[in-house]
Image (cartoon, helix red, strand yellow):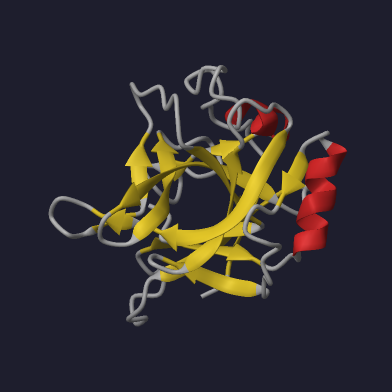
Length: 196
């Protein structure tokens, strides 16, 4: 499951990408100063774009913690999407890559092999997420997961929900069914390369 992702683009580039889709980004807490980050890990703070209630075609970019404590105190950083509707607190998690780890091909290697997935011909993509306010850590977000699509199945038995660009505005609109937006990407949509 995804427990490490990448975001190396700046705020202006993200805003421009969303503007191309006719989605206006607002900064209710001020524009965040994003640094290029190769590894965003569980409990790190990272940017998300949340719904602005009652407004279609706009989103609010804020920085929040990735994961909230579950009932067993373990971090909830991935959340199964199957059979759920998510009619509130949706968010888009902006990324330009994510990692999966497999047992090493080289039997002498002690660490797992690390694979970077990026989206063909797109500088950024959005992962479907939800956020909640918790007494322990305040507002935090998690990534939704699903059965693996064809590009990820050789590496893992689950995958994060990567939304098609055409679905970004709909994900921010709670009147649109979440179930209708969660689907595997066509084969060859993602590039993968070993990075560790």
